[in-house]
Length: 355
Ligand SMILES: *Cc1c(COP(=O)(O)O)cnc(C)c1O
Image (cartoon, rainbow, N blue to C red; front, side, top):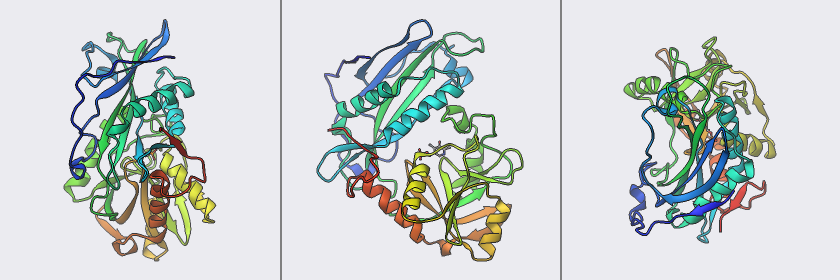
């Protein structure tokens, strides 16, 4: 694979007020494109000026959800260097998602090289302020200009970059979560473990319902018994019950989060007992009622760790840890962000340096 550079002659002005970046609304000067066809496989990649796509209105992505994506960040260290956090995990997950949707996989080292190269080209777009980062969005779309429902024969892999603000501009704060008992996100045998676009469109309705009630995210239950906890919004979820950290196991409907995996590894290294198992709402509320539910938090690349202060299920409300951030939640947030922004040594070999 070659990566050909066709760089812009008219770079955009970088945002001056990094406190107003928000998330995913500003884009850097370039994008990486790599096309694939069933006949010829992957072409060379190219880095070109960020621009709109021209696609057939019949393209598979518009009709049948032939789309998968990833999300990771480039972080700027105090020395001004740029680094990635466990990008090989995103590469592997992207290929797993591709396998589920019968879309083409890319050799791991080539996809990693694509991601590293676009970040290297765009490194001046990695913001400098505390908590900010360059959000990296690799995605793959089916572009076959045919309406027949069949596996894709032509695809475009693309990586775009978006300087993004601090998720916690006002500091780490607990959120209120609604347990959804009607809509489901995924079932075993479906696409829950894949990061594919269709999963998210299908989650909008429950999200809207939660927002109307004043809750910031939805906690999803399993699609078969509507009983076992799966994840919260687009984050994995963890509970601390009687000192033990419990998180739903990966049975096919839960997205295998890299933050989840990192938290489990950190917790075990620090001597915590961690259980990956099924946990029902009943068990959770029993634990809450008897005071054994000590902490709850979500995990994901965007927020890192998001403390859960309150749960509602069919109009029953439970406060967790007096709506305060728990010690374990805070420890995980501090440890992970210190590694990501290069403030702590990278003992687990998770960091990939760009320059
Ligand atoms: C991306 C995502 C996560 C979190 O994964 P990370 O790799 O930790 O960012 C969790 N759940 C869903 C549904 C997701 O899409």
